[in-house]
Image (tube, rainbow, N blue to C red; front, side):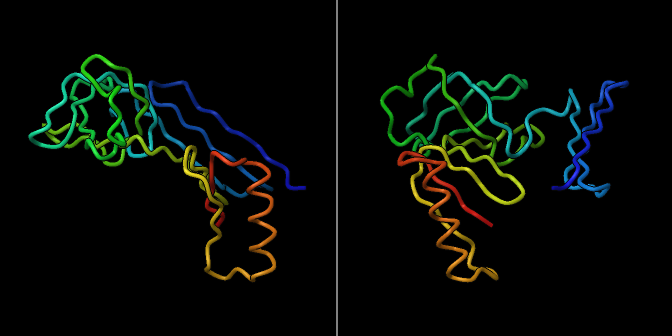
Length: 154
């Protein structure tokens, strides 16, 4: 089994986390408090306004600029009304005067897999996978995710 080491630097306002496996860097995270929401961030937002004319809703995600959630992303959910809380993930970070582009289709990306809550199905990357190994990954994924969630195994 590989030895893992987590290094954390929080002496300045910027926080840095590095994950090492057997001395080799496998993941690096840098958090800047004033940077705003980044692509992939998941947060609880509050709907400020629903604008059917542009097919979306503006969502307060706490970084000073309201993010944009396309109405189709909300799965035509009637609970998407002004003031409602909604769990969103940033697809595209905010730029200049525009807020972040948001989605309600959440996914958690890891090194070997992408977990997709609420999207059933286990998919295995076709790149370099042999059929027997792919079947084993699918069986293991179904066992872990259950029938409501899914995953993409890399």
